[in-house]
Length: 173
Image 1 (cartoon, rainbow, N blue to C red):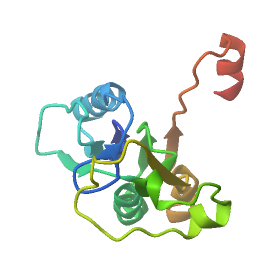
Image 2: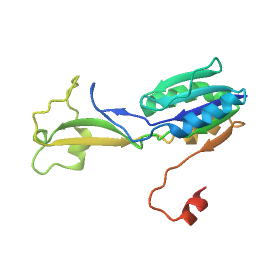
Image 3: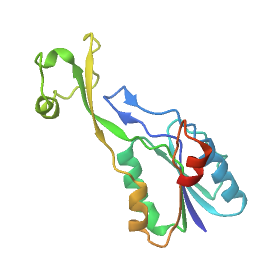
């Protein structure tokens, strides 16, 4: 059986040296991959750059993932050939469009000014400004594409909920 597992978290680049990430460790993906490998299955592990990894074997294909775009492209190519997908990665809900100094805006800037502003591309954003503004855009829900790419795949998805009652966790599950 061919199993695709996503694990850890994504990091969305702000510039060439900074990114927005989350605290996902990849522990669930690591343990899940180990169980499938120990059962003799072929495992494809798409894991965030900081994710914990299982020991490498000839049945494990490891593909490092940075951001949601990278994850989307890898999954789009791999999912059609999979029997099972276990999507346990903490995928970023938003990614930066830009980050710039507050001085680049008028005193009473508008929504249009924020959305239409495009700073010149730089390798590293300067740290001279006392205040920065970062505009984020929503990322696609990659799990929603999996059944389009492979309607017959057995899909398991995970969602982190914080501060909710056990009854709500069971209801969502």
